[in-house]
Length: 211
Image (cartoon, rainbow, N blue to C red; front, side):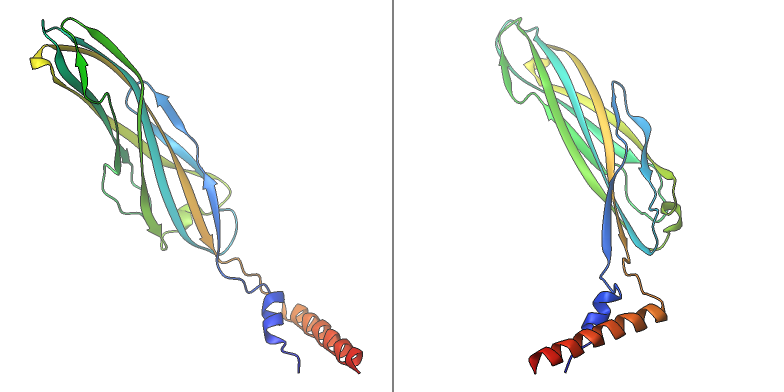
């Protein structure tokens, strides 16, 4: 006896949910605080069931530290940028969504010494959650925006308060969107009949070949 149901289900395209991952635009690097829109493509297919958005960002910078003390001092300098995202339909999150930090680490500077620390960097990311209800803004053939901004702070410690610092920081941000959709395509009744007839024919050929 030939079992047609599994074959019919496979032929009918009754597949599990599928996912599509898209990369959004990159904003930055900006030499001041970020305040821009990440642009993402909408889902242009059918059967969308959920949207998942992950935002990532990074900072890079240089720090120059001068020890104005007459004696050797231990110093450290750190920059931290908080990343914030504007309101998005269907998502609920708390700003800042993440922070990125770079640091010189603990350093020893001789009296009167100036040292430059270059190529410092840090990064972070956050998943904004899953939207399964307000999907309409993410469907179509156009784009939508994810507003992103940063707030950066800088701190130098050590040196007995006799430090002079010069610091620069640039920020970059982007996002990745995962669309989950129902990828099944159910044929018309006539197509199902043709599929069934074809499979039945194959079964009869098999039975004849065994005789």
